[in-house]
Image (cartoon, rainbow, N blue to C red):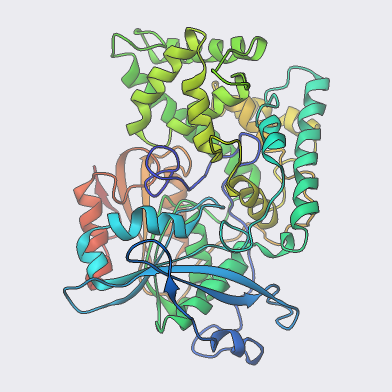
Length: 509
């Protein structure tokens, strides 16, 4: 998604409510850390004073290291956690500005994977010339003591559980699946589960900032990475340098509102896809109207629920995996041709195309193993906010609102929001306004038809931040920087290079 996008361009910035485990997080309120301003609490001095030992990564041009942070910031003497860091040094020409941290979102996306696979080679040359490009995998993610929950075979079964139950028995089976997933996380990663909150990850970023020798943090965060960046700014406003929050989240919302808003966001994205599709002679959803396209897609899902189809491997394509595949393609309009082809195949009884999209969403490898994206995603989300629903009865009552938000995806998204109900660790965050009083100008970027982080979230975050500047991209897809708008890219590049933010309310297309 971000990186420019999880599925078609790179891999990683989840943001959707569901499909069993995913969901944009927006919790994690906490008092400002004791390291606010120039002072560092005495008990944290060993962490702020450690020396980074850089080594070759095995990837040309990149260096890697490991830094230590307290497992529990409330008890800094209670043990450490090792966090993986990578960088590519400024190439020149021009005077080095400092370090630029990047995070692609998730939660659960590997920032190092994003750095090495896209940001440090794909960001504009003037940015890479004057910044050391840096990434830290957040605690519990990828190379930083990753959360694990299920084996590959059990994850395969989990992703195929019916997420639009038709009766009490199917609802109970889905609820049980969520419980099994949560129990697996506790069994395999119980020590770290209470300590993967966004607040703690933001504090880790400040330790890294100091170890890199930067007085202030310069940062580009996408999707969930915007919540991480805003959380940093709220804790350390005096240490904010140049912050870009692209595909912004709204920290003031409870989980149920986040899930319902995203449901509406994916409906908006589907309507945009459908409007484009029906203009084409080969549109697998018909060539008359978006309404007919929606009806055709719902019928396809219903048919797959009743009778899954072959995919060329042992797994069949049922409604759950098919829905995931469609959702995956909503993040970037560049994936629309692939989605049309996959839907056409499914209507012929051939499910490999939608399965491939679903596998990209879940980060499933051809050998049947999974990256830890989905495990970390649930771990962070369920710690950052109280669950949207505590039981199937609450989901049932909310279904009309979700189906109003999206006739196509509403039912599945509502049930997906039940995923934190059985979580073994109590949440530590609450919805809250994020103001970061005293911070330097922060650029908040919103895309008008963004499915995963609806545009109104960017509007809200920019209003909350005392120094927020809203930059609007009028278009499709998830996030805006580096996705083809010269207007957006120029505004952000100017800000990163000379510190001049765009005028608040600037609009681009």
